[in-house]
Image 1 (spheres, helix red, strand yellow):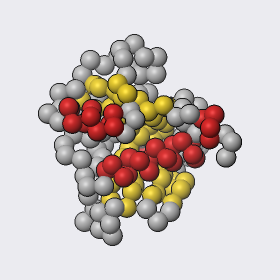
Image 2 (tube, rainbow, N blue to C red; image 1 turned 90 degrees about the vertical axis):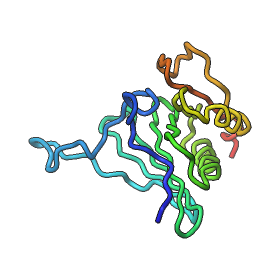
Image 3 (cartoon, rainbow, N blue to C red; image 1 turned 180 degrees about the horizontal axis):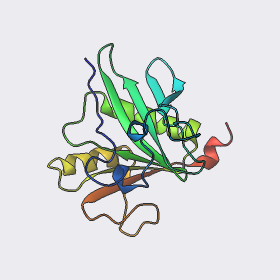
Length: 177
């Protein structure tokens, strides 16, 4: 039995965290339309003993697309995060409900992968402001290095019901590697 920490992308608002919506392959018509072919299902782009990263291949270059992170906590438990990559920014939705065991370790692996392999500038997390556990979430993510995004930030949509926090990645130091 796998414990998962994800919800369907965009279940409670348009697009993941209100970020530009990415194409959803499951919504495509099997067999395609005319001469064009369906985009591929998620492709594994990285895999090690603990972390597997897959992505929905973008239909058009430059368009946002979904990235799936699965972190193996134990032989039978896994922590999963879904994110949208858009303009070198990664938007990660914190699902409603109690976070699964291993979520913190999975998120740390996600941040490391985003910085070292994806070369993103910012990782945004988002969740409903109305959550009962909003206070503990804010403290936890602040402890991990996230900061609250102030209204009007150019990378996030105006959404009064959604809280955004950002983790800034210093790409200058990783360029030396």
